[in-house]
Amino acid sequence: MKNSKQIILSILTLLFCANVFAQENYQQKIKAYQKNYVQEHEVVKGKDKKNFKFFKPNSRYHVMATFTKMNDSVGFIMKTSGTRDKKFFRYGIINFSIDNKPLQLTVYSSEQLMNDTAYKGYLFLPFTDLTSGNNSYGGGRYIDLLFSAIQENKISIDFNKAYNPYCVYAYGYNCPIPPKENHLSIAIKAGEKMYVGKKKERED
Image (cartoon, rainbow, N blue to C red; front, side, top):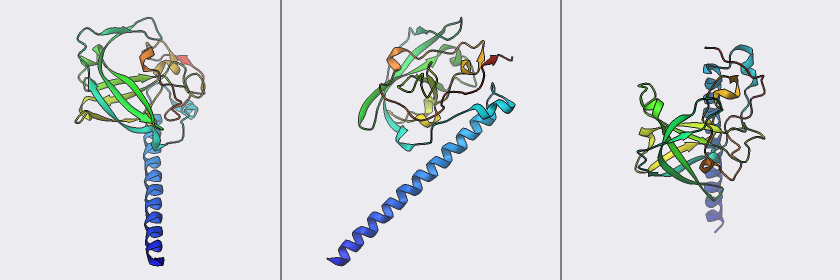
């Protein structure tokens, strides 16, 4: 009996260590992703890059969602932060859970990007949550997805990669405003936080 308890304890210890290692490895990957995001950012440059802030990487906000395709051939106009609205199509619904709470978001395809060879393979996931206007930008955040990432009606969503729209950093951009249907009634403490730098004029 004593040996059995020791074996069980050893197994539990190994599982715990493996989980800790996996979490640390995941955090390192996200930190590397964020570092590259800051370095390659097209709007914020030079010394202003120090004004980026992020939530601590957390794998609880990396979820596997169920994808349901929608047949939207008409599309709709999504309001933006600027003077020019943009046309999108509802491409599908994703269902997932965080902390055992069922959640749902709509994924969109952009009419503009569908005609751009470099970006036509991308889907658009804008959202707001209970951090919006507090720890994160009030106008919501975005996640980029690939059509090809949808496999057998499943898609991985990593909120640790959520980022702010360009209009956070500079005037003159027309940033899509997340529709009300894409508000999450929980706090997504992952991804990019509120930018702490001064908003500037757009540089073309």
